[in-house]
Amino acid sequence: MSNQQSSMPEETRAKHGKKSRATPKPFEVWYRAPDPTLFFKDWCRFGKYKDKATAQEVIRQKRTDPYFEYEIRNKLARAE
Image (cartoon, rainbow, N blue to C red; front, side, top):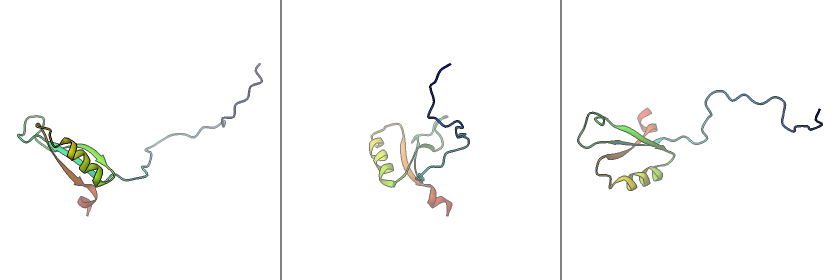
């Protein structure tokens, strides 16, 4: 038999459930087609961001997109 020993703990922590996020992401960027089609007739979420500056940077990068229009929504403002 081997004389090797492991420094790992014998019982590992069970990883169950959703991990809580340290920073909430209240700003969302949504997109839709200017002329509604079968697939893009409603607004769809593009992404979630932790601050408004990051969301505005995404809008700035996407403003030349000829197929979709984008807007920023604040989840916390809707909850009130």
